[in-house]
Image (tube, rainbow, N blue to C red; front, side, top):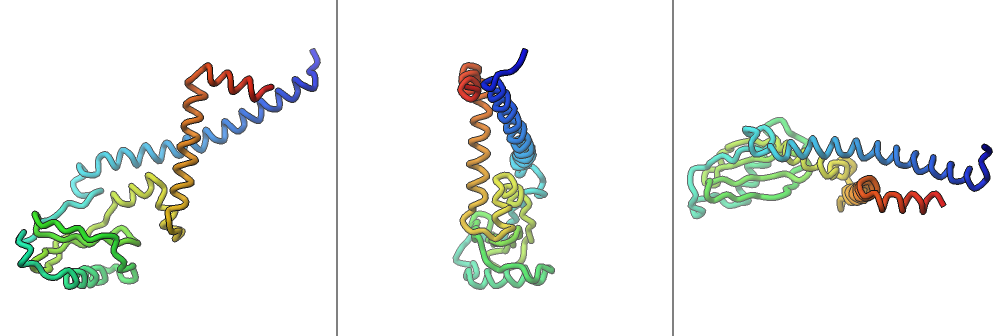
Length: 190
């Protein structure tokens, strides 16, 4: 039985659709593995005995009147960053977490995954953190690419999450909703 021109066109469209399906499925498979592994790690971060998420150490007093001024504590944190062999790292802060109930202040840096916990009253270094959970979060939503490429505004993260979310939606609807799937297939084959 010979194929007509219309049938040949339909066969070519089906081949193209299958090729696109395979490529996007391959992309989504890699993405789902990354999201699954990083999601498991994020779920366990507070139960990792300080490996993923740093434990908050306690200072000497919760009385804020006895604490050193923030600029003095900031200077100690920056000096500590350099003294611990991390010279050349950015001193730009992402945030300062003040934990009066623990007598501790935490300086978290913006351009790398480190933090310094200080006693609020004495300025004594309580802990130098490697913030692995922040790295895992950045891998989970792919903002790590923005950080590595120095892109402001998390452009890659927005494009990646939008594209991935839309692909997952389309795959879910087309693969698990037979009436919609057959309607789309019939429309594309015509």
